[in-house]
Length: 86
Image (tube, rainbow, N blue to C red; front, side, top):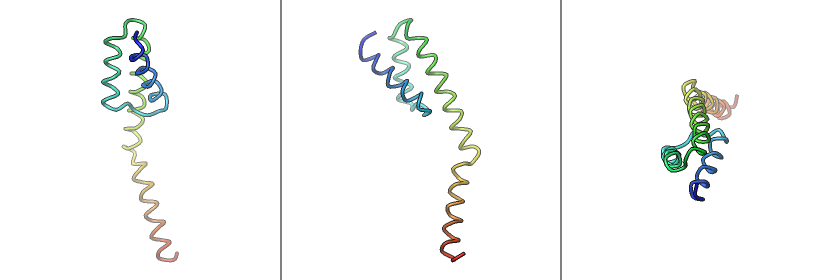
């Protein structure tokens, strides 16, 4: 495998291991690495795809539960209480 593919794969592994879902461009890079990498790369790519899917599912579940909305509502309520002097 050439050095450019190796560098791309390492960068994608770092992003996925940080818990962030891969962007569309990064997923395209992953597909390119799979196409051109050979057999030894296929296992690493499969692990990354699984990790990305779990990160993406966790992100979707978090927004579906409304975690972000609840935090924003709490901040607004705190702000109103402070302004009202309570």
